[in-house]
Image 1 (tube, rainbow, N blue to C red):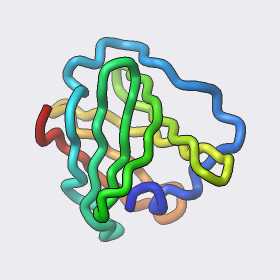
Image 2: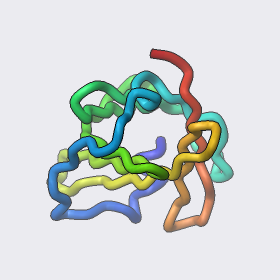
Image 3: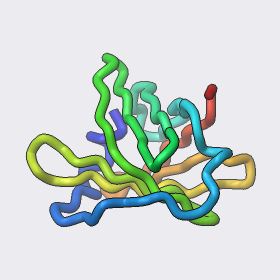
Image 4: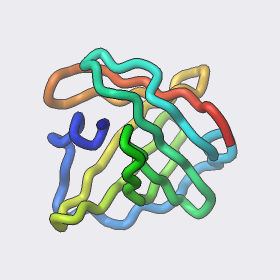
Length: 115
């Protein structure tokens, strides 16, 4: 799962994240299309009001918040242990989201699959 894949990005004191730029293109379900580290397929669901949900292969859901800028999407997921997982996803010209692992240097790419 991508949350475990990016454990190095955990921060204990992350502020709440709110939506910035227009995010209409982002709303809906995104699927992990490719991961150079071989992580299993998972999903991100971006909703109105800066709400994002990470869904692992078993269906477990973790709720968080996101913010959109011109070339990136930043997501913040508060975890049960009191820490916060932060993801920085670059946006390419085809509106795919890519995440580079600080730990391995691997890249995960998400593509939109539905509303």
